[in-house]
Image (cartoon, rainbow, N blue to C red; front, side, top):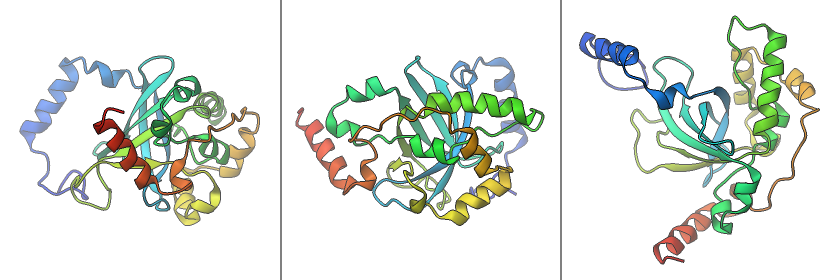
Length: 232
C-alpha cells in the first residue's frame, strides 16, 4: 500500500527508508530546521475563487520582514508538498509595483474570523497555547501573502502549471461545511477564537490587495507577464 493513498506508486522500500533516516540524522537540513511556525487555513484559486483548499503552512523567517512557507495538504508524515507562500510586511508591500501588488492577498479576515489557526500540540496546555497563538496572529494579520499551489489535491500527481491562489476575505465566500469539518476534526472552538482575537489590532488593507475578489485576475496576470516580457 502506498505511504499516501492519494499518490500512485508502491510503498517506500527499505532502501529509501534507510536513506531518508540516515539523511535526517547526518545532514544539517538547515533551511528546514529554521521553520518556526505551523499554521492551518484555507486557500482558493485566484482565477476561480470559491473552492476551499485546506493548507498546512510551515513557515520560516528569511528576515524580520519576510517569511517563506512550505505548504502541505495535511500535517501527516506523508503529506504532499502542494505549494509555497511568501509573506511580507506592509512597508515592503507598499513599495511593490501596482500590478505586482494585485498578486498578493491580505490575512485580516483569516485572523479575525478564526480561520487561520496554529494547531496545538497534544501535550501543550490550552491556555498557554492560546497566548502563543494570539502573539502569532498579531504578527500575521498585517502581512501580505503571495501563494502558488503546484499540486491540485484532486490530482494524483502535480499536473500543469503553478496556480496563483488567494485568501478568503469574508465568510460568505467560504463553504461553511468545509470550514466546520476542519474545526470539528481539529477540536477548534471558532467562537472562542473570534472572541480571543478581538484585541488584535486590525490594520487597513491596501486597495490593490485581494484582487481576485475584485475582478478578472487572469487579465491582471496576463498584463503583468506581458509587461515583464517587454521590460516595462
